[in-house]
Amino acid sequence: MQYADFTYYSETFGGDLIPQRLFARYELKARSFIDNITFGNITAPCDDKVKTAVCEMCEAFYCDDEKKNIHSEEHDGYGIVYEDEDLEEKLGRIAEIYLAATGYLYGGIY
Image 1 (tube, helix red, strand yellow):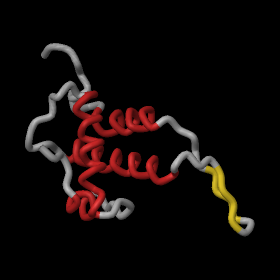
Image 2 (image 1 turned 180 degrees about the vertical axis):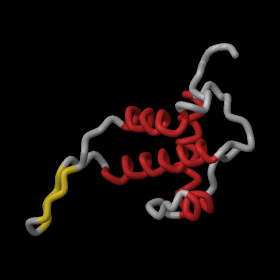
Image 3 (image 1 turned 90 degrees about the horizontal axis):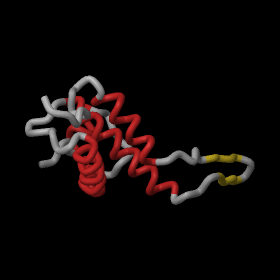
């Protein structure tokens, strides 16, 4: 079950970074990560907190793929330094922001 579609990403989340043709691939990665940390506790239909977390994680995956491990570059005096951040840590922080108060991250018995 897809947690967020491109329409939600572009219209509700306001995302414009990921091209529509690539969104499904990144949504699958984000959904798999969320399923792992929530112990498969998310069921359909999922709420906006889950959808928003998926969209932000999609962008994190996309940015990680796009930077291709470049840590700095310079063109005609204009320099860019990419933050060397662990993707899994970043995804974990995104999950905490959106899912901490939902109960989805709880691995115990209710």
